[in-house]
Amino acid sequence: MVTFMQEFITEDQHILFDGTKIISNSQKMTINQIGYNQEENYEPQINLLYAFAVNSNTPVYYRLVNGSVCDVTAFKLSLQEIQKKRLVVVADKGFGSEANFKLLNEQEILYVVPLKRNSALIDKSKLKTGDKASFEGHFMYCNRLIWYYKCGEVFVYLDGDLKNEEERCYLRNVGCNVEGYSSEEFLVRQFDFGCIALRSNLGCGAEEVYCLYKTRFEIECLFDFLKNLLGQDRSYMQNEVCLEAWAFVNHLSLMMVYRVYDLLRQYKFLSKVSVEDFLCYLKNRTRRT
Image (spheres, rainbow, N blue to C red):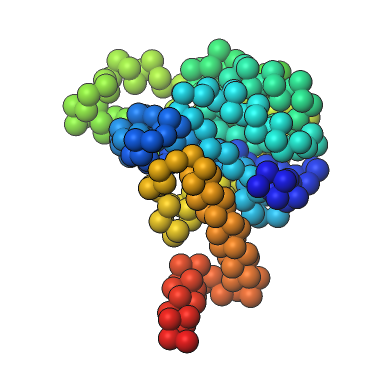
């Protein structure tokens, strides 16, 4: 299975990395652990790490990870299996640990990784002045004005629209007496709103790094296809061999889904027919035949 996946990963690709949770209540496996996800589900879960190639617009690699395995270990094992060095890795902020940065630099892999807003690597002095003259410049992204400056390998961006939206949302929660929100905490966090910090060793400009990071929505679409279109947000496998086979079949299915998606986009049918509609049509046609 790894050999098969390696054939779809070429040098100089832009690879998106992210993970999601798969529910599994099997009593016969140890890979599923009690955990927490964004849906506030505390059932036993398996971590599913995925890699998506932006250049070819296709999922190219996955790895099932025990809930007790730390991110850096899973990331290291994945890079070893991929066996390619000339890659540009675009990852989620969950991968932004010093251990992962050290690993990427040792492997001479280029990367764009967001930092958590409380990271000590972010110099917020220019944000706190409110003086745009201290920034290095600005650019437009999807009709949004983005200001930026750089500190070492860290690009700091200020999105005014995002800042207003986050401030409005926070103060709305303060007004509704939502637990954990207060006027005092708002003042503490006021310089975090609208701030995006990206660490990168690409050696290119701020706008290119930002645009590359924004391709991350592609892997979010991948998880949406997996869980909603294919309905594979939960596994009923009872041993790890069957689980691995189940995950590989899902991977092949995702690759075919993206081929259908690319064909629909190539022939400009996406405005009329979704991937889900097209697959339903094929299923019904098969049944009638």
